[in-house]
Amino acid sequence: MNIAFIRFYEELNDFLPPLKRKVVYPVHFKDSPSIKSIIESEGIPHTEVDLILINGNAVSFKEKVNPDDQISVYPVFESFDISPINVIRLKPLRDPKFVLDVHLGKLARYLRMLGFDSVYDYRYNTDEILRISILEKRAILTRNRKLLMKKELEMGYWVRSEMSFNQVSEIIQRFDLKNQIRLFSICTICNGRLQPVEKETVMNQHPGFKFYPGTAFYQCNDCLHTFWYGTHCERFKNAVTERV
Image (tube, rainbow, N blue to C red; front, side, top):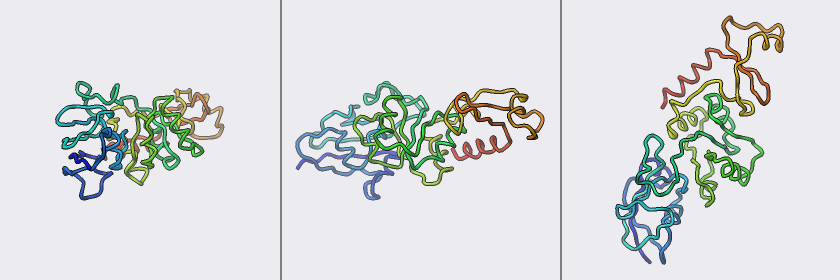
């Protein structure tokens, strides 16, 4: 049985038992496994990893592990660019498009409110979520770690928080999206695109409904649902970003 030494950094420690967090510890293996198999044997999905150093050199997931190797594993960096040394991903995960699993419906709605393209349907099974992620190049947001270990998957994130409001702040911070928030750009109902619409059009669609003077209106291009800007929208945005 061979031994190498590994340390996981920052939020990758969320996946580890307490005794393995923030320390170098030995991993045992036979033959010459890939570093990807070593990482996932420790319970960490490869989608959470953006940089691997073996003996100080940046390597890909295919790199073989040898006895006495010193391994450092770092999480996905979204707030700064490590492309000059990154040999894992073709490009940084900068495009904020998501597909969410069945447990994250409210998070999908919140992300849409903030202007982030978020596909969700409670009927989607694991295979459908994976297919959408690969076909449309969307990052999977999930509470299911095993889903993120699918070898075909490139982009994904395990949502740590259990409360929906905390989850949205977590995603904004994790993917460095604070400066990309665009209220009233995505429909919270169907994920379609919103466009400004004239007050007269809305009044004809909702006769008898009284609106405050100066209210701005938006309508979905797909489902035609109408939205209007209220003070609660700005309060929601501020409450989310104050936590980031």
